[in-house]
Length: 385
Ligand SMILES: [Zn+2]
Image (cartoon, rainbow, N blue to C red; front, side):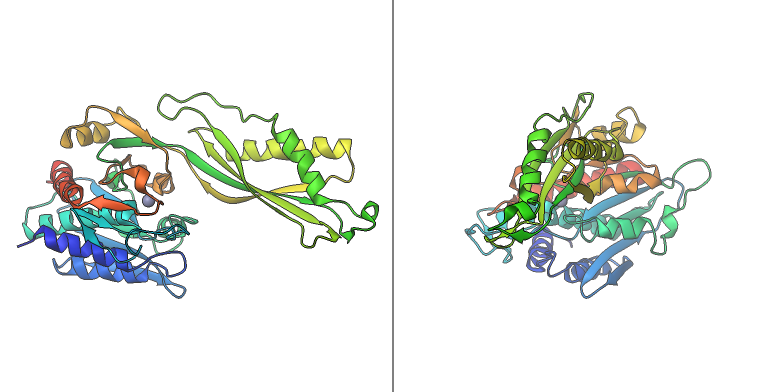
């Protein structure tokens, strides 16, 4: 018999796997593979580098219905500088909660989905469509895992579309939404802008070009720059924030370089390239005023916005399966937009409070993880039985 102590133990093991950018995802992929293997579910670990890994599992069915894809990520952000009540990677249980980095984002969701899938398989219910469980590497950094999954690495058979429609009926992302049905999030464009000057001894600054001074001019110009957008019903507006700055090496050297990092959150339909060319136009304008001005922009990261069609059957049936009367938007981004080539609707739905993610003392209520198991089982039966 399956019980929640198994689910809890799985969650604690996943937290202890410490899947930060430094340590990689392989340990967590092996834990999930062992767990699903206990119900005879085939898993494939795709690993690369020293310790990077994606995991794919497929529960095969009669294939008369489109499958359900659970999209997760194995990695977590670092514990951070702040002190934690309990060690960040111990998975301590206290007063009905499990504490630890990743508990809410998103190992709680993984433990629920894996438990639900095992219970469905163990119950030997006949499925008309496949369950596919995919857990990606690198969602918190560069989405390398999902990109590898969708593009170049031996695309799994279920990605190939069948005649008359997609082979996947829908995608569920078990990220923490506190059981809200989420169908939209903004996109993310991270840019690095560098001004380039010319180094000189600072006793003779007139022989150099000060890159920090150039950045000052650029920052003043950016105060007047607004990205054009049409406000979105669920997502509001587009935002832009300059969040890092670095420049200069020595106190007695005129700096040859200065750079800033900008985080832009975009709405569906906004073109990243248009924003980038806005910056290039600003550089050109400043160069016209001062021929020594020199700047360049490069993309550090881009994630598309998510906007699932609310009128599609999948969203309607999903809402009825979990008894939700409305859909919402979230502030974080997911790997969901990378699955656009599947042509399947994407819904984010999972246990835990999203505001606890990436913070010290991150935790999840064990009862919520258990509740999610029941929801995921209902969803699987609704779409695949
Ligand atoms: Zn996440």
